[in-house]
Image 1 (cartoon, rainbow, N blue to C red):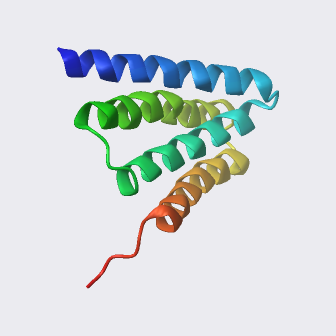
Image 2: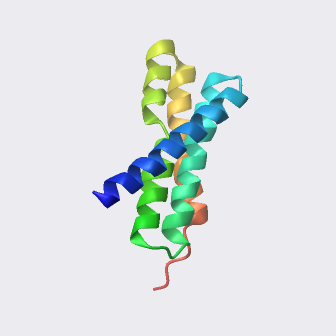
Length: 110
């Protein structure tokens, strides 16, 4: 129960952050794009760099970063516009997210 509460609090803070960010950026798809990339970067930094407790990781990765990102909005944008621009937006989100994680991830020693 404690873990659920921690994830819920982190998710609420992430969702509120996404809302404030989207209100400060007037262009709708741009705000969602930035929120998604910011959430990926936060989750990647925490997963790869920070040594934190299990509860802090739960609060920050599935909680805050999960609440900040919103893949459902990408689907809505595609559905509303159904154009090459929305398809490009979809792939740009995925490719840029993967590039962010590639840059953040420490080199693997073999």
